[in-house]
Length: 179
Image 1 (cartoon, rainbow, N blue to C red):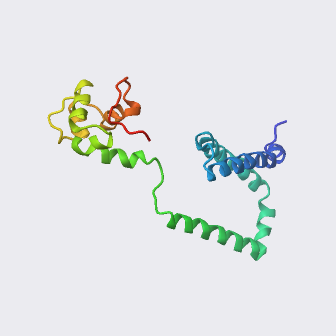
Image 2 (cartoon, one colour):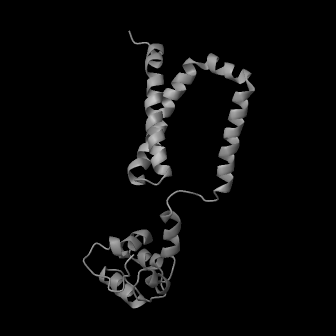
Image 3 (cartoon, rainbow, N blue to C red):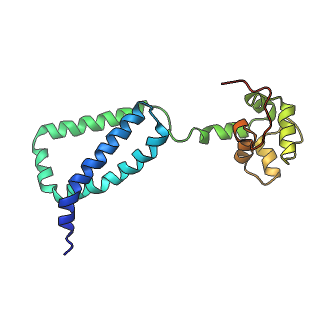
């Protein structure tokens, strides 16, 4: 017969242990910037999965867990942890997330005359590339936002098309400098 209490008793601690090891290894790899592409999603998702057996374990052992709070050590440890978390939140000073979400609007609202040097081409070359790709460019003082809107396109999509590594064609960028 299926009993949730037996499942919790039998599997919560082994799952917590296994998932904690995975989280510790992937978190350490992320800390040292070792293969972040391989570890980031694994760390994020499996850390979320770790919460389920953790809460199952806490639910099953709630009365014993509360006994820890009779000792000031638990309160001091919890307060120190919250203080450390708060300090990181207040002092890191960045919003996080994908930096492209902040960079793309700056690039798509810049005139072609300002954008071209970033792509290691002249404004006229950028105009010619956009025209060749089917966009109507009236002036190099226009922005990708203006050019894209006339074609019912997203300015970000147009930007991705003109970036050298995303251009989707065999054109060589003679003015490109090696990284």
